[in-house]
Amino acid sequence: MRRLLLAALFFALGAAAPATAQLPIFDAHVHYSRPDWDVYSADRALAILSTAGVRRAIVSSTPDDGTLKLYERAPKTIVPFLRPYRTRDDMGNWHNDPGVRSYVEERLKRGIYRGIGEFHLSESGVGGSTLKRFAGLAADRDLFLQAHVDDVTIEKLLTLYPKTRFLWAHAGMSASASAVGGLLERFPKLWVELALRTDVAPGGTLDPKWRAVFVKYPDRFMVGTDTWVTSRWEAMQGYHRDVQTWLGQLPRDVAEAIAWKNGERLFPSP
Ligand SMILES: [Zn+2]
Image 1 (cartoon, helix red, strand yellow):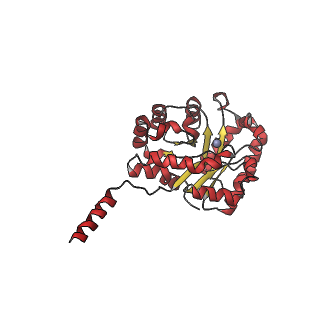
Image 2 (cartoon, rainbow, N blue to C red):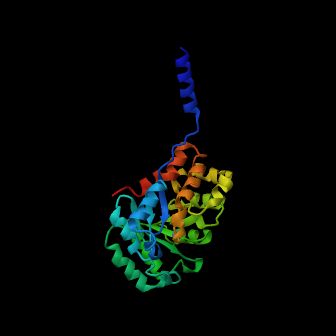
Image 3 (cartoon, rainbow, N blue to C red):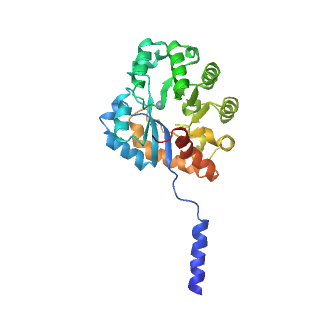
């Protein structure tokens, strides 16, 4: 009898203990660019993703060959996005550059890409001829455009290209939770990833304003690391540990959606 009681007690304690299981992660913002190649082989980079709990990842790279190196090794893990930068020199004027346009059109023939980006752009560039072409291609082929832009620029893009789906990198980096919520309300073709947004959970505690937006739009957010410099690969495991901490403060269904289910739904495995 006593043994039974003890067993029941242990069971109750076990059931009441906080969930320690880590959620699988769909990481919506990874790069494997030229400086990374010598430091981390493709296999090592894939092992880092796996150790950090990343089940699948959107990868874009400068140059795009980096993405292919990972994709060829792990086509089920890597969701390839085509970055329009042949070298970092393309960052400034890609949106008007006919050379970038033909480069991207040529590479899209591979048929593996699920999006174009991540790209950078300021407000004045939204009407650029190359960007306009990409927005049309994306709408026709059901690709996303992953845009690292501020809130004014994403609003202009969504208004100018209403048929195109946008993945907003870093939630605009500095846009407030309420500004992000307002844009999600107005634009059904907007999705948001939260790479580098440590303000979501300062000191590990989920900010109430972000929490409100996540609960209201659970299907529109994803997490991301952004390996924009090689040292970010080193930081990935700790970064995702912190992400798991604030995900754990959300209702389970919301946390699962943001952690990986949204990514799986938007980019089903080939
Ligand atoms: Zn990035």
